[in-house]
Image (tube, rainbow, N blue to C red; front, side):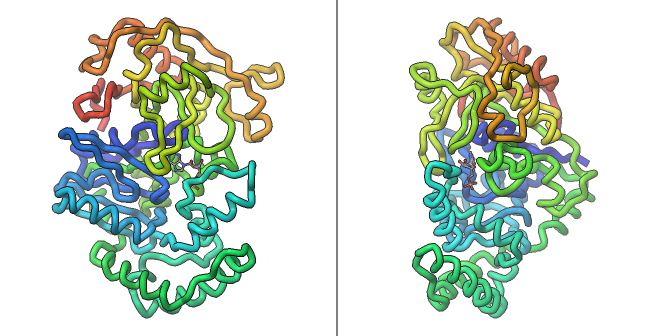
Length: 426
Ligand code: IMP
């Protein structure tokens, strides 16, 4: 049995799409198990660039089964547009399976996302405003609409009627225009018809694949520090992007998860609000932001930039079960005289090595750095560890030492060819 979970080990945007695409070439199945179109996975190959939001990264390879599992929240309108966009660019031969238990993001979820953010004022989360939080909230509140409801016009009518009564009351209370049942139903029932051919019980499909000993890749969205349970709550997303969440979100047994590959940048970024101890500003932040194209795939917001935070990375390793690392955007750091790595925090004069639960405490954490010599060489054409300048080799080894985790891949540019695998692990 061979399964691999890909997990963002920082605050998202670590380059999971690229590594998923790279490893997907060896996989039989690629699964997205949480989140929705708040994610933005950029994949480049053959000189072309694709930005995926909801659809799994194996979609470009006709041999790969792509699964959108039960833990996802799916905006059917956006998902169909994404699929049409891919088809228009020649991606027509694909295999896609959507869980009948996944939840549907409705337009009122997006309205509510925007309204909550507005009401929170300067305490806003900085969400992607895609309705993800309100959709998961309805799921937990047992007033959500599932894909199995959407694709059956009779059931959908009944479920939408009940739900919309409640949601319209909520919208009215917040001063947001209510939805007319008929027009919402008529629009969404059509999406249901288009989606229906892809819908199945994906847990059954995965069981069959596990029995066949297929290679299954679970593609995480967001990052561990944005996990609803283990992230910097409340500045988090509304699902859990850890290895432990995969069995629940995909309907498989926990014992089927073999390996968890944590994807991390050679530095740190974060979008949205919340604590970020190693954040830097000014010229250096600008240098890294421009070289790393650190602007949101979904929202285009400039990302906050900082030094590599090995306390947060170690925390992510522990709570997400990471046993390998992939170091991304390594080339971005070329040209720096000195590079810092945070290996501990100082909290009110005490040295700590973990992420505190209290946000107030986390805001008070000051990073403790070690400083390393940088390198000037352009490393984007490097194709092996040995070709890296000595200081870059030392930087990579230092991260392994501080995180007690082996780096099995490093990446020096956006193309598939700029991905250097140091060890077979899948
Ligand atoms: P939401 O997931 O839209 O509710 O946003 C909650 C937080 O997660 C915000 O800080 C977002 O910027 C962040 N977030 C959500 N999805 C991603 C992602 O794919 N990459 C990076 N940050 C994300």
